[in-house]
Image (cartoon, rainbow, N blue to C red; front, side, top):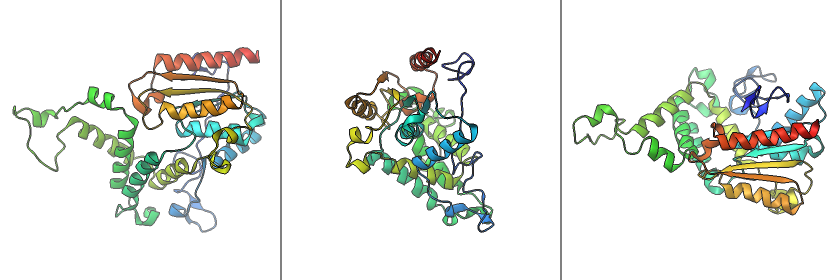
Length: 307
């Protein structure tokens, strides 16, 4: 998506990518020392919101001497940040590209996040979020959380096409196939999910997972306006591109259309693309030529307007 000659062409645009506060990939987060106590933050790290992240990003722009952005772009939780930019700093954003996102989470989405969080906090190795000083990681909880999340990122069609009801070779070779064990990994989808969970638990911080999912849950710009999204978006000044994917049931196209409707009611300049893709929520991370084409065309129009 991003690079020389790619849809977001770095021969024409300077691209800034930020590790958000609370991250486990560079910015200050729960794994860092609290300067007030000299101990690792752990569970004492402050709760962060999408609005906090946008404020921190604005401070970065101040430090870089950048007064206005050609565009803010994000997918999923990143799309919420892009939308929030247009609300918090409307004069600093000319375009917002909001991909596979929503104006807030549905109760079902919050429920999935809560189940994943419970898997982590009930892991005996979690130690109330202060597991670092015990020299352990709540890997079991992280694995389950990732497995739950991964199921919600994929569509039923993709899972059926990729795995179906296939058994692993080790248990499928005897003709009848089944050994009826409650413990063994017998289906391919089981093996895949456990692999994804294992990999995730090796590099992601449990407290960061809790912070990020809470930030997702809390985001709701219409709340301050009695749930009226049109009123909430009245202060925006940017032009918008929204993209959704037909089989994304976690951030369904209907949620993007809510944003489109509210923006149109405010007479904003809005482009909307609904991509018929089989990949579920994961589609926004994949190299779909129609998706790439939409983004390329939009950024070419931005570059053309500037020149």
